[in-house]
Amino acid sequence: MSPCPSHRSRFPHLTIALLWLLVLGGCEQGDRSRSAAGGYQRPPTAVIASAVVQRPVSDVLEAIGTTQANESVTLSAKVTDTVSRVRFEDGQFVEQGAVLVELANAEESALLAEAEANVDESARQLRRLEDLYRKRAIPVSQRDEASAAYNAAKARYESLVARLDDLLIRAPFSGLLGFRDVSAGTLITPGTAITTLDDVSQIKLDFAVPEVHLAVLQPGLSLIARSTAYPDRGFPASVQTVATRIDPVTRTARVRAVVENKDRVLRPGMLLTVALQTNERIALAIPESALVQRSGRTSVYVVVQQEDGPALAAALRMIETGARYDGWVEVLRGLTEGERVITEGTLKVRDQSPIRLLEGRETAQEAAGGPRRPRRSA
Image (tube, rainbow, N blue to C red):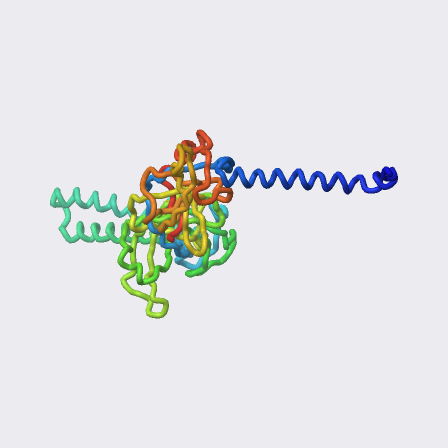
């Protein structure tokens, strides 16, 4: 008796699913058999590698410093008088000797003109008496009296010139002026602030360094200063002076460096971070992207030949690192010059897994090398 058609078509989808499971199970078992027999191998992973090279390296000591002007002064008057004219604008750059403020000088100018006339008159009188004295027409005492009168008139004139000069406020050195604090007609006295003047062609940078680093601090030591106002720019500087005393509270030594500031972008009072370069040397280095951190230890994947063939493989190797700087890291132990380490693709490889180097990328990575600015110590 043949089966009922309704029974044969009741579960058609279940029958098809069972058949597919049997087929897939047989394929998977076959793959495992081929893998065990060595017939299946994992395809090589595409990676980028960089050679271990020798590069300039230095330890970097970081600190925070405050800038000061090379020269700074608050300008004021020497006498009590009224401002007659202001000859500068806020923030103006002035040369040494430039007149900034004129005080009222009408009385002094009149007295100076009178003194100048007295000098001329006494000079003429002295010349006439000297001619008569040479002809023995007058006694020597009369000539001496004329000479004394001339010297007195000249001294009076020079005194008024100095007094008149005190009524002119001049720039004692070249620099940038601050805000103007007086106007024409202001009555000022000695000590009244007129404006500030700062020489910012060079900037003094003061910062503190722990006494444990005192042995490496010396005049001429190079450093790099950075400001949050100019995040993409470094300001080269050099140590000028190391303080003769150690702060007994903080146990730090005050250091003063000099920063060239020809374009006058740095101003007094700015906060700069300092990277002091010490122990400059040539050492092995690799790109920082090659580092692999596992279980608190630093490793890299080194490009090696596979043991059972000419293909390349990634070998995990523990290394010891030193200073890190601008994307590079110093290698103290574990690598030799010329070896290649994987810089891109480390997340896709395992120890002894096959790899394939992308052509042309390694050369480009090495061409980007050269002396770099140290970033921070290890």
